[in-house]
Amino acid sequence: MIFAAASVIALITIIVIIACFKATGFFIELNKINIKDKDEK
Image (tube, rainbow, N blue to C red; front, side, top):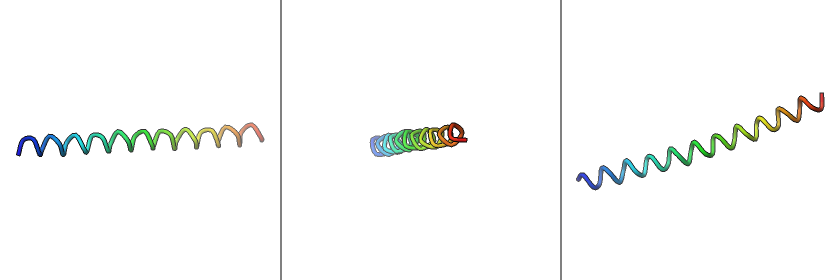
């Protein structure tokens, strides 16, 4: 049972880290678009 709990926690941690990386990349793309808009204006 302890091993199962540890593997579940590890899996959740990995999912959270991946989600954070994807969110960070998404926000970086948004910032690039915003900067381009400002430069054009």
